[in-house]
Structures are given as C-alpha cells and as structure tokens.
Amino acid sequence: MTENRRVKTAQDLAPRNAPVQGRSKLRSKQIIDVTGELLERVGLDDLNTILIAKEVGISVGSLYHYFPNKHAILYAMGSRWLETVEAALDEIGRWPIEDLPMETLVVQMLGLKLKTYKQQKAILTLVQAMFSVPELRELDEQHDELEISRMAEVFKRMGINRHLRERERLARLYLEVTHSVMLVVVNQKGDRAKRTLADLKMIICNLLAQHSPQNH
Image (cartoon, rainbow, N blue to C red; front, side, top):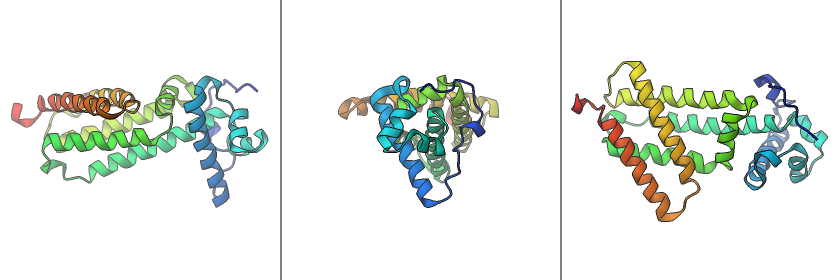
C-alpha cells in the first residue's frame, strides 16, 4: 500500500478522531511508540502503515481510525518531541540565569538538551524526516523558532545586551551547533560521548564569552 504523496496540512495530519477518551489516548500513544521503535529498526523508507499495524496488533483499517497515514504518525511523534523540547526550555527559563557562572549554565543547558534527545526513539531519523519530508517541514520550522526565541532571551538574561537580531543570530548559531552535535552524541557511548560533550561545552563557552559584557 503506497502512501499519498500530496503535501498535507496540519489538519490533514491530525488524528482521524481526537483521542479524548482514555483508551483512545493509550492506543494513539502505543501507535506512536511502536512507530518510533520501527523507525529505529527499518528506517523511514521501509516504514509503512501495514508494518505499523502488524506490530501494534491491529488491522490497517483500525490504524486509519487514529491516523490517516504514516506521515500523520510521524507528525504526532515530532509534535510530542517538540513538547519535551519546550518543557526543557521552560525549565531553563526558571533557573536563576543572572546568578549562574557561564560554564555552569552551559553545562546544565547541554545536559538537559541531551536528555530530550536521548528520550526520543530514532531521534536522528525523526529529525531528518522533519527537515526533508514536506508534510513534516513545519515541525522543523517550529523547532527552530522555539529554540531561537528562547535562547535569545537566555542570552539577554546572561547580560548579552545586543540588538535582538544579533542575539537571535547567536541563538541560531547555538542551535545549529548544539543540534548537530547532540545527534552525534546520542549514538556515542562512554568516554567518547563525554569527550564530545566536553568539546561542545568549550565551543559554546568560547562563543558566548566573546559576547559577554566583560569583553565589551
């Protein structure tokens, strides 16, 4: 069964029936979780609704009761990951940023960010899909806008009182560097991962130090 390649709107990708009842919510979550596991095993190209339904233990028709196609499931998965990213940024916003040493703040931010990447199954494939699949592209844009706006505010609280556009430029640079490295670290183990994180911390600290009030 082939997937419809028409570019769909967010409304098209919404579940067929909003899972307001507990059983429906659990089934939707199960479908999303199973899709994440399959995505790790078979990859995006070989993922399809027949395989997902079989793994869940339901018919394809029953699957379509919750999601119209595989991209709708991936859209729900990406949306759920964005919720964890936003929750992490909310947590950072509650920190006493003005009083924390830069190195301490950077270490804590990177640690929390890595946690959100490790919690998401098949994060690398999901992120690649969000960037390359037209039906999911708006999730990639939402992710970037969210991180850039929040980190620009963090930088302001750190004392980097530049023009908003300059802080957003720094925030985008922070996003691109940390995002790409996190996607590497999640697949590393032990000392290798620790060394990569240490190098990332050094890069970010050096970047922000160049724009700190002490250097101006």
